[in-house]
Length: 228
Image (tube, one colour):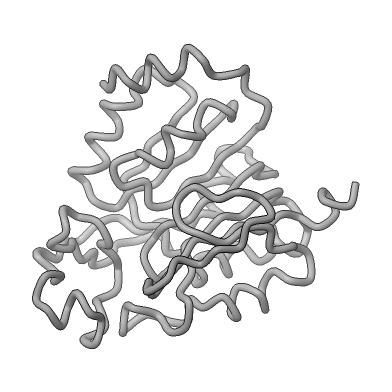
């Protein structure tokens, strides 16, 4: 249980959004900043040790469901590679050998484990979810691949806002598919407008990709909501 989370919650306004879906919660820092705005939160973390810590941290927030699984679009199991950087940047993929941290020996896969994999469409259907207020993805190089499995939701405009980690150019995980901004654009541009770029805390209308980084965070919003 995090006492700082409880203190911050005292100053939160009443929830004004319905459903938050958060993929790749890690330690929960990003989730803690926004979870109070939503009436229901479904969050996913593949690392079992992290997931258990998250359950304890957010146990008092009854609207949050923590699911220990890698969201891949398929129910089953998958190999999950835990990184040497305190678990940060862990992924179903493996680092490209020319990634600077890998070349220097500072970043490497410290452990590979088998974890449950999950079909997000099936999961949400079983819980009666038909619309997502906000979708947040930080699943280390696999974000676009999973978002593509939500294609029907995107086509029907049933996700109001999408925030995702995006590769600036090519995927830093050498054995994973495209995760580039161009790839996201091809999927989203018909229905969504890019409203922010940066790192971690995004501000609408600010487009500031971090210098020297291989990846960045981007936010899209349903264009019909912007125009209304």
